Image (cartoon, rainbow, N blue to C red; front, side, top):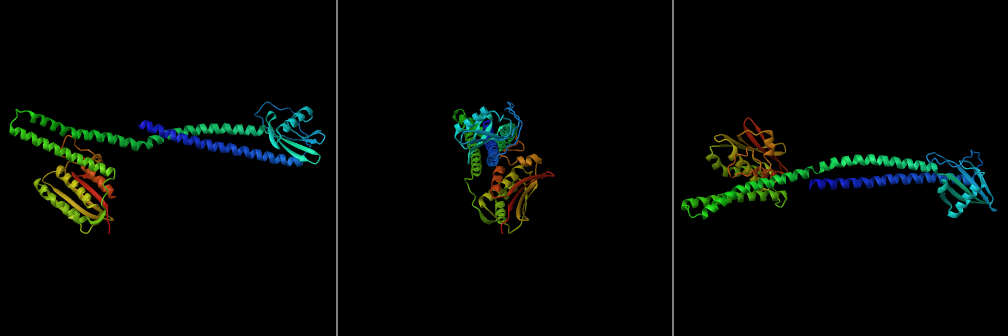
Length: 406
């Protein structure tokens, strides 16, 4: 999929480059040709009314097309058809047959301005009192210049095309990096979710099969039923967490943003957890600055606090102090939950917010899915805030920063 996406991106870029080159180089050639023709015709008009009998070396046309030639000459044709030539160039103006052939070629075209490709000549016909004059200008120099310009455009175009192709390859890789990352995360997410669901499903199936075996006692069958119920609840919790993340990713559960007293919300949210901390011999210390208000969804912010406190219950070392504080820091309200636990590395402090990530994959209580902190991060991001973790001296600290509303 990524390969096809990159190929399509390169094709689009190179198509745009091709069109741009065609327009730019085509425009350069067109306007250069028009400009040279215009200057040539202007000079021919000047000569038509001021013919000059200038001696010039008599030479026949040279087959070497790369040679630059800029001669002008004029044919005066009187009313009797007599031809007289003035000027100079690379043509033998004494050759009456050649002059007559040129005059006949002009008559055949029946245009005031035109070209005779056979001789590389442009002509201009003007009427005079005693006949007409035909001014000829050699255009081999124009063609030489245009051919050189075309050659240069082709060379520059090929070099530019190659450079843009290399750039498009690099751009395609850079542009599709987020897509590649998302696809990899999606694959990992599916694999992790499948793994998390596989264990409870296996337990449920095994216990269900045992229930069908009449050889087990009623007590054993009661244990099997409890196992099935326990694993079903675990699966329901996992599915609900996955649905919550999906709703946040798709922005289908819009936050009910209101101005609220964050200090009171944190204080009230701690109360239900106090007995749980007491059971685990964890001492709870709070430092909540009063009167801090933010704009947010009350239920979602309470969910963030619950996730952080639940995380502290599961992973902080028993018989130690858990510190919860809410302080003003500039224009932000900063909530912190700290306690002693297994030290987190710098990589863990970043990865811990990834879905299904666990610091110790072998350590699980059967109820943690590695989704809580991911949900908390999504909620905080939705509120325009920031959540992060730090670890030092065996103390792990989780911070949440939100904008204060006055």
